[in-house]
Image 1 (cartoon, protein in one colour):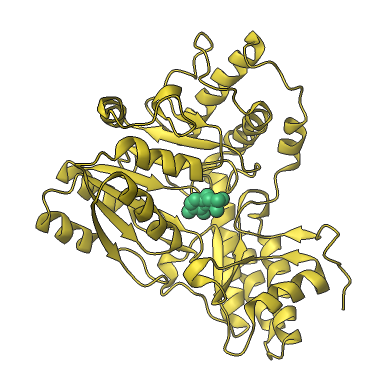
Image 2 (cartoon, helix red, strand yellow; image 1 turned 60 degrees about the vertical axis):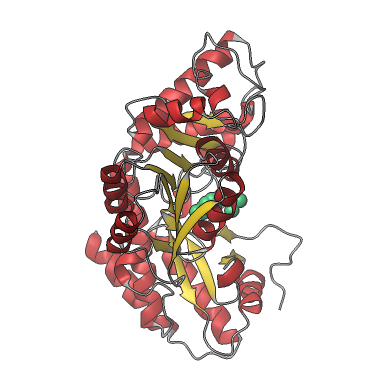
Length: 393
Ligand SMILES: *Cc1c(COP(=O)(O)O)cnc(C)c1O
């Protein structure tokens, strides 16, 4: 059956990033493309950085880099990690593990704590590792390892790293904006996020919080990239309308981010986080009630911005997503790397962090599963999800 052929747009995109952008953001992207040195653009840029500072609850200005957040992560490794640094990389999933490969490029001294990709990092293990290795200077961690839909306790980890005197690099790309997390809450020295997940804007920019001591360390690192797309230091003063840009900024993406930040701040971060939490909670209740399992080993590490559903025995995960799209026009995300084929991800990010989308997702997921031979109690799943949603009303 091909009600929704592949060459046509789907009806609903419920992915874990990139996500469907807010309609207002799409209109913002259509604003005039100003010359980057036009005073109107320089003022806009300064205002956008100030709004990002407010959203990130930072005491200093964040940096915007002009590529999607992988640029920010790679730039953080290149700029902060010097050859004599000893890096402790915490890996609970594909992104956490991946950061270790970048770290290794800039320092040969890499230690890792790795846990199964449906579990989270235990702060007690981090504490023991820091005690056993006083030479550790930098710790890196992914907050929400998206291909697993699991959350690491970064505030607790950050407190330990700070007490140790180390620098902390945090990948908060798919958690910031969808739950309570800010760079200074976890004492991050570099905190990388972006507009393309919970802020509901397209991929194309990195937003980065940088502590004062991280600025000093990067500026003192002779190998930190300069005159390069990977440079962070070059952009330190670009927020000011009186300072030049090192390279041409992505003008349209800045327009989109401007609107996305207004939406986030006007709705109120607490209200935004609450609808992410509720959507995910309804989704998890529905998934288990219809007879499927959540990938995360325990409920309290399950992400409020993505639900990862374990693929049942005998189901081909790729065919499952194809069936959901072809029959209902609903798009889900697959796993990545080690989790590919083992789970299906339903994103609750930005505009799709609305409880009614949990109902739509459960219907499409259950329908596609049953089309592939499962015998799920879809109605029970819907009722369980609706009960969660109504209890909150
Ligand atoms: C989305 C995401 C990124 C950015 O990488 P993509 O190329 O968009 O996949 C980085 N880290 C995490 C945890 C993410 O979810």
